[in-house]
Amino acid sequence: MDDNKIWFTSDYHFGHQKYFIYGPRGFSSNEDMSEYIIRAHNERVSWSDDVYFLGDAMLNDNKYGINCFRRLNGKFHIIIGNHDTNERIELLKALPNVVEICGYATALKCKGYHLYLSHYPTLVGNYDEDKPLKRRVLNIHGHTHSKDKFMDCTCYVNYNAAVDAHNCAPVELEEIIKDICKKKEAK
Image 1 (cartoon, rainbow, N blue to C red):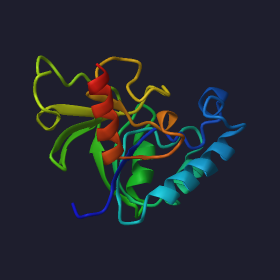
Image 2: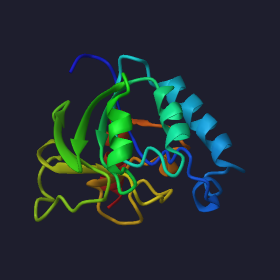
Image 3: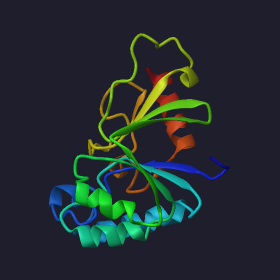
Image 4: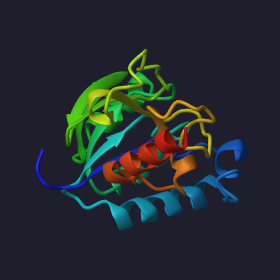
């Protein structure tokens, strides 16, 4: 990986016409939410940046969803989420901005950190509280639709990168590490 930025995000839900998705995010329709997400994403992410998308790109209207996803900046590494059907995965694979489909989870060593990327929150720690952060495994996930970056739990090694917790925008690795360090200190 080069010096480009590394971003994490999930749960865009393009085309999901249910109020319980777009309403709590502050929008009156999925279309309004989708346009905001695209704009917020592209204001932060350049075409050469890497984006680890942790599942649930679209739901219901695949044509609408894939057209929204096509407009996003970045080189996408996609983790499969619970709404990512085989048909949606094939549509995503065909996009020029999708580098790889990583399966249901993947491990990534990045800037000295050991990351376990998944759609679902995953327990990754055991009795290793005494280890420095760079020696621990950090789970970056989506799925919960919680506005809490730590999914309402005291465990600082599980980080919610979904748009619900980040004002409908992707989050950079450096910000994630800062948030984790603050949570660890507060513990």
